[in-house]
Structures are given as C-alpha cells and as structure tokens.
Amino acid sequence: MRNLNFHHLHYFWTVAKEGHLTRAAKKLNVSQSALSSQIRQLEEQLGQALFLRQGRTLTLTEAGHLVLEYAESIFSLGSELLSVMESGEHQRVQQLRIGAVATLSRNFQENFLRPTFGQPDVRLVITSSNLDDLLGQLKMHKLDLILSNRPVVSDSATPWRCKLLAQQRVCLVGPTQAGFEQLSFPRDLEQVNVLLPGPDSDIRTQFDIYCEEHGVSISPYAEVDDMAMLRLLARDAGGIAVVPEVVVQDEIQSGMLRNYCTLPVTECFYAITARRHFELPLLNALLARRSTSDEPPAALI
Image 1 (cartoon, helix red, strand yellow):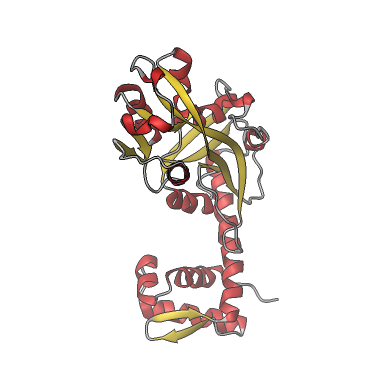
Image 2 (cartoon, one colour):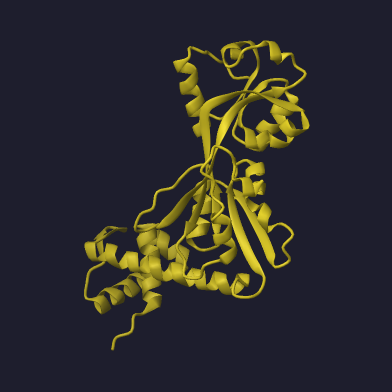
C-alpha cells in the first residue's frame, strides 16, 4: 500500500498558493532545484502532472486543482489539531478566540460576549484587524470566530459559515443641549455639522442613497471609519452623527445624547466561522442567541 508523502504535499501546497517557484522556495527556505525535485517526486507518486510550467511561473493543471483541494483540507485539519491542543480546548477551561473587524461597534462586541463574562472556566482572547487578515487567521484556526459588519461568501477553498446575528437601525444622534429639538430631521441636516461613517461603509452607501432620494445635500463635517471614534465625536463635537443606536447606547441611556431620527438604514452584524471537527460548546451557545428583530439580541444586552 502506497503512503502519501506529506512533506512533498506541503511543498506542492506552498507552490500552488504562491504561484511562483522562486517565492515558494524563499518562503520554504529551500533551493529552487530542491523544491522542483520534491514536486516532481509527488507528481511521479500520483501519476499526474500538477503544474504547467511557464518559466518560473506555475499554473495548476486540472489534476493540480483537485490535489490542492485535498491539500487545503489536510493542512487546515492539521492546523485545527494544533490549535485545539495548544489552546486547551480539550480541557476544562474553554479559550474563545474572537476576531473583530476594527470598525465594528465595541458595544455590539461587548453585548455579544456578555454571557461569557464572569465565567471562571472561560478565557477570552479578542483580536482586532481588517476582515482579510482575520479570515486568514480563521482559515488557519488561529481564531474561532469573526464578528463582522460585512458578510463573506463560501467556496470550495474557503468554506466559511456566515450567520446573521442581528440588524440595527441607523439613527441621527446628537447632544441634548445643542438646540436641535427645533429642527426637523433629516430635512434640516444641511443646517448642522454632520458626522458620517467613511465612504467604504455600507451604512454610508445606504445613507447617501437615502439623501439623494429625498433631495438632501450634505457636506460632511467629519468622515470616520472607526465606530469608537464616531461615538466620541457624536458626544463631543456638537454635531449630528449617523450611527447605529447600539454604538451610543450608553450615552443615550444616560441622557448625554438623543436619538433625533431613526432612518430606513440598517447595519447588519455577522458571525463568521470555519468548519471544524472539534466543536466548541461555548461558541455554539453564543451563536444560538440570534435576533431576528432590528435590535441587538435581547439576551446579549
């Protein structure tokens, strides 16, 4: 019975992902000739050509694409095994590694994770970065879950599980003492300083369309990608901020800020996970707390 040489398979996997022999050799810290030899040995063992060679650039053959799918599954499973053993997930203490998109509301993150607070057998590790970086970590099982305000699409190479957790209405929020009570929003937005999410935000896209449809022309006083910063400006800059209410929930409850208008604009919150063999009961319990309303899940607040 033939045994697959996983060392050769790992070299193939790296070359396939890099698409270039020189870059792959540098990443693996081996010579190009040694790398080519390893790939040829794997092709001989499998009885199929895996690459079409065009100089130093390599293109996968049909058989190469099939082998790459298997390699992705094999090495992903290996990463999961190491992750489970190193993080102690098989022991009494459950470590939950959360990746959060940097622009995501901190309040929403806290609301989602609140059921884990104070549990002596739970250890939280929270990482903040851009979505692409977090997906790379999730793929290698360095994260258990990503919280995002953007969905992702699954395919054969990246079988993500993307679950809608909640939807939050976007509001026009401002200080209570600024004399805004006499204005009618959104019609009078042109008369105040408007604080907006950045141009790449889905909220911003929806809001811009809404303004166009209602003939409202706005020159932003500030454009802010970071929801935490937008929260501070809503509180201190004396303007009207376009934010999901969850972002400023504490300030509204304390009376520091007021919701002047609820817009037909929503922000969606997603949980992104990867398929894995070792399921985390704690993670499954958190994901079961889904809300179908326009508010954050009641159990998470």
